[in-house]
Image 1: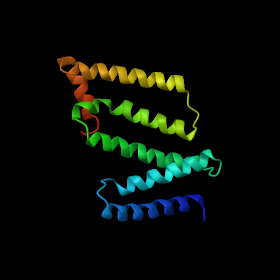
Image 2: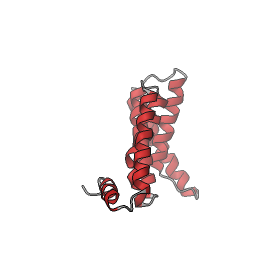
Image 3: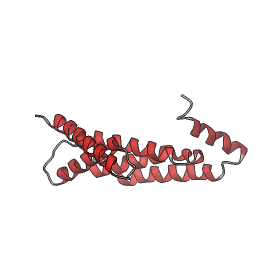
Length: 146
């Protein structure tokens, strides 16, 4: 059996375990998200130990968790904070890439992220200004008006 089938079986098995756990627990969590996250965390640990050499599989699963976390946070924050979507998604992506050992130019990446966070923070804090409000409203609407 190849690695992809094993990973799919792991996620499926964990999904069933987490669904059962949810029915006996008061914890509120997404069984699918937990299954994918536990799988890539385990595979990442094995990768770091030299026991699993398929970083592409881990990266795809990490990407799923990055997007899942992004949507989780988006649902639980005020719409005004949605101006930070881009730097949040890019920050989570950089963390995942760094964890998997992808070739990352850390100074350049962190510099770009810092600029994005600063610029969008300025827009956020001055969002009541008529000119700034137009820009902020367009940024926020980018993901809901399509």
